[in-house]
Length: 412
Image (cartoon, rainbow, N blue to C red; front, side, top):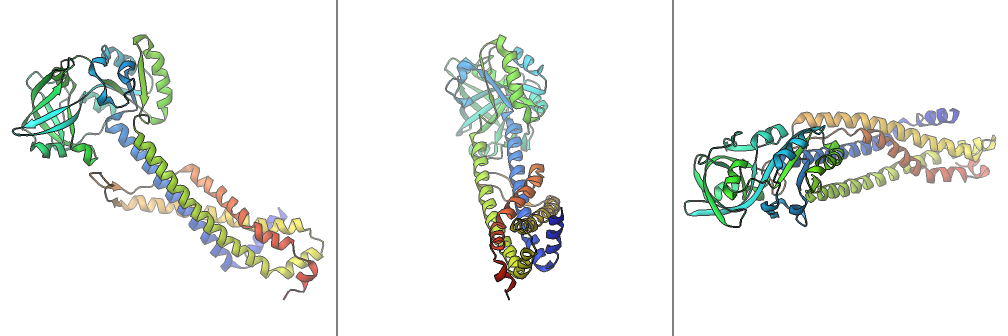
């Protein structure tokens, strides 16, 4: 405790140099907090966009359909879920499940007049989508009706790019052609209810959505490709999957996949951002070590005669080293705390500014620049600064303890 007080008092002897060191450490702390906040917000935002964009937390498909086919559109509807309403009811009895809905994935051609284009379609239960919290980005017209349409009153919503390709707008009638369950072609005339965007430009050029009842009429089946499940919290995905595997065992053999297993893109983004974070962190690490090490070394060089006097009076070299090291740790602690406070203020200011960033490549709309508060980073960055300052103090400490008493007392 005595040496800690001496080290703190030594820092106050040259306030300008001490404040400069604290400024460097605080700036490094702020940089790490802002970077961690941006990455955390990006991860959380991307995760929720993927889940509530229609993917859900968990997909339940038959083992036969999913064997060797990770992509749902590649699976045959003839291998889909037969008694899916009972499976869905059992799923919704599971704790932490918000809702579950049946989907049919299909591909085909949509045409209007002489213009046609291929589509990648999904048939959903709109009332279940609402309960599951799925976001439907309608840009014109209206979404799909929640009740099953009567025969001859089928409707679709088209992606913006697909609608432009065939020249369709809300209220028009288009012909949807797809392969049936028995491998024949069938077509239905459907009314365009609205235009939607998925947020991804390339997907919008092929996106088509219809009611589940319409798709079952179109391809002649009462099966569904899969059942999608959403939860009250994403963190419970693994636990709920384990519970569902046990509950669904009496119904047959199913393959359950979580949202991360079906979105390799998310893992790629995480790897990219993690690389950026470690790169920036390494730069901050080097800058703080070099600048503060130089400051500590200057402090030692200015006090050579003082250190020599301490050694002559019987102070051990270990105690001298402890004083220099404690000075560095005080700088790391005070700079880290100041950086945390300023970093939190900067995060609040940036979030309040409502800054809009340009759309990423391939995206339709811009994204908000928001930063998350990462509790573990707030405490972790102080520990990191203490470690950095301990490393920065190595050379100045060695310089201090290697001084010869005679040379130190005669130093000018």
